[in-house]
Length: 171
Image (tube, rainbow, N blue to C red; front, side, top):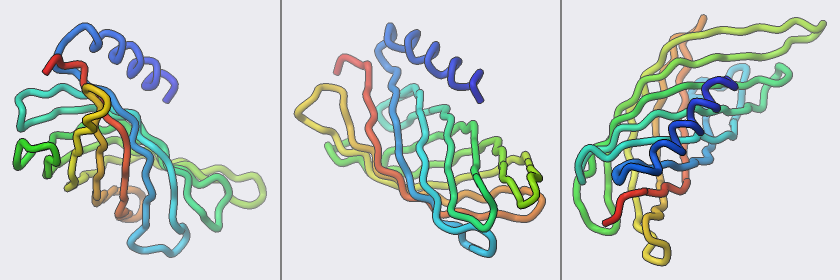
């Protein structure tokens, strides 16, 4: 995870040179759809992306969510890739997206037992990107996403995120 974060910041600094790159942070709340052992979680994603065209964005991100659980320190870490298609080009841009990621699930059980599970998952999403006219290049990202992960048991999450996106492009 530390290597992923370092790679993210190196790419962020490199991306500042080019006009179509963007970066962002998206805090989120995640709701398990089958809350048997875990309850609502909170966390955030760090994002780095490239605007292929005014209607298409491609991004990579790293994230971490901590859940309320029967287990101690129940967390889900991820490295993800997303594509977003913007339906209109106004100051409020609704979008649809699809993503895939590699997820690492860690938790501690009583008697000092630690468990870890890794799996791939898919994430369809929808949301709206609002241009903030006060600061050039700054946008408010709102997103609702569904995440299905194939861990030892099937896991499905619904998450709501609201964050900031800063675009390095000149326009």
